[in-house]
Image (cartoon, rainbow, N blue to C red; front, side, top):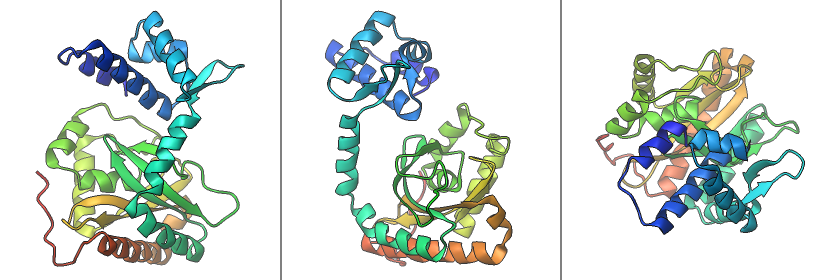
Length: 274
């Protein structure tokens, strides 16, 4: 959560003290899940009084939700959060259906780091991944989360979000991850419309200059896009149109198979994005 988001929360009607403490702890955990920080950095980022933050950090560390490096004094998420996240993934139907599918694609196209991705708020979150090569592509493993205006997976999930959410998202600050990240709202609207028309997303250099990615949608029984299969590939591969078409086709077949497993049928009409 950014400082502006924290300020927006502060403007909401006051809650009982216990809920305020809980909300504060959750804001801290969300912030550190994106970037480990020292206590002073957290206080500056969230504009929290030092004494209040100190109590929150100590409690979360004692309960195992945060880890504090003794040398650098940097806080990061702790093993207890990993346990909770692992439970979520272990009981996730889409993960069960998609794991073998992305593994098969990765074995056929070993240059691709394969991902299963969901949208959580303003982030695209990798909940399962597979890379057949010994040296994996960075920022492609399970747990990685990126803003929706970056990466093919982010674009695809944003394209199929409700229209009100899209406009609210585009009206907010859009971070530039590289010199090629699209942050112009009108350009993004054009990109999202193209994705809905062609049925897949493609980006290059917008997360890391040396990578590109392709993403296809997974539907539930109501025809809603609930996840995406994404292939992160070396940027040089994006110019090989035949190879790209083959990867997209494989991802589309896999996504369709997972969608059917979730109850989707081709005859199910696409819901309106309201």
